[in-house]
Length: 453
Image (cartoon, rainbow, N blue to C red; front, side, top):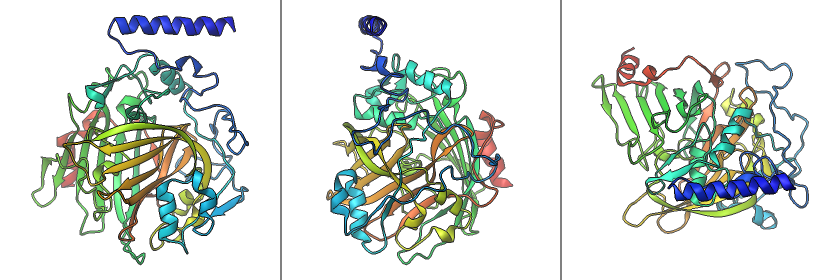
């Protein structure tokens, strides 16, 4: 007890000294990280009735027989559905459903459901990432009215959040490995389910996540991103580079696009906010990629608090069904029998468009996994305050990293009955966590070379 009291006193004295010096204060509760809170700020213990178990370290070992390059084997193939939420019984579960999830059940009463399984808190990160999160709790702060961060390293900067902007920056800066390469499929089915698969190449260099990196040594670069559409022929040839920044005011996002008609690279300021996403047929905005990306400047952010919610989790069945997308793609939504929902604690953050600015979505409510800061569910509202689109991330643990990350992302449009899903991995094209990407691979000259191949 004396040691904990002494540590707490020293942290408080240090916070007062830093405030006097004009530095960021230690986050209130930082001394609890690694005690009753995990390093990511999650409540370590179980909930009252035990339906959410204690976190015991997550899933950090591959399933026996799995090898790198394979689709990720399901660690829990014997798990059975505990109960199913439908439009008929939704009122019984309304306290653990988001308004958007309830709206989905009402929109598709005969075909949409949530199959709920045993909760398994599998989220895990490397030990050095946990150490970085704990350190961030004593150093990190917002800049430029919340449009940037400083004095943090490698992962989510605010494990003990006190405001809404802390939540979204935790999602934006969460650990996702050092670099990745993948080929994925994207579909935007019309209301009856007919669709064309769009094939997309992606490469990402997560500079901020690299070993030893800080917000300062990263030279304001969070990540560098390449995306190229390779099919169908009418869309093939569109190629994009994005440099995502940590301070969006001092140095906003930079983007370039290769124009296949002109065979030239041009700056692309339109790759941001609510402009249409690549080959999305208008079914998502640019800032809906990865659930949310880019500058938070157009919204006022409010931390609502922690709550329990039924969320997609451990979606290995969907991940392995991606090999044959016909098993997943249905009219109006993905096949619910291929999805897995669990009860987890989440952070709820509400974002409302600021006066004097605009966005297609007047309001967005985010639900972040407390164990990983991955956004799992987002409800998006139109200008009449009606729920318009509901987004869900279907995550798995990539146990060779380890990190929890989505294998599929879906944005469901309640108005037109359509949706967009990205992430389909054909056999042999599963995400590859690589080490050969470098800064020069994401230059305008590199994009020009890619376009002219």
